[in-house]
Every structure is written in structure tokens, then in C-alpha cells.
Image (cartoon, rainbow, N blue to C red):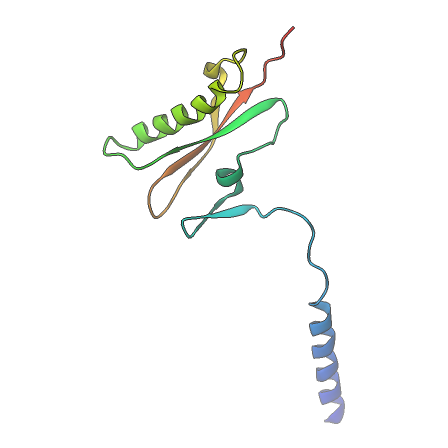
Length: 120
């Protein structure tokens, strides 16, 4: 019986010591918090997936005009951000690549991508 107690205590010590290791791996979490709700990371920070593209997040609050209007409004908001970047880029080349709707307040977030134009 004594051997079982010793083994059990040894296992507890090993487990507790192994959990004290450095867990900082310098990776960003895949989610962020918005209004006490977990959201995809791109909702808070945008994206930098492809260096050949600009990215912007458009946000639109719930509207009595419906979700279709709300998504169009979010797209307009993102395109306004692109318009400030450069005159050489055409916002018509932008496209929605991700969508998230807040489950509590129905705010719509869309991630929009626009290719960077190289001037010749």
C-alpha cells in the first residue's frame, strides 16, 4: 500500500512541475473579445494574409432595413477606408472575404480585400 501512495505522490509532483513551464510561444490568439463575446481575430485587427492586398473591416449596426442592407453598409464602410489609401486603386476591385455577425447585438463585421496596384 505504501508503494501506491509513493507512486501517486510522485505522479502529482511531476504533473505539477510540468505545468509550471514557460508557455509563452509569442503567437497571437485566434480570437478577440468584443462586447463580452469572442470574435475572430480579423474582426479586431483586420488581416495581413497576403502582402499584395489591402484589407479593411467594415462594421454596420443592426438596421430596420434588413440584413442585406446591413451587409452593404458594412461593405461601404470598408471601401471608404480603401479610398483613403491611394488614388491608383479602384475600390470596385475589392471583395468581401469573411463575415461575422455578433450573436448578441447583431452587428455585422466583414473583411474586405483589395489588390494593391503597382504603378508603372
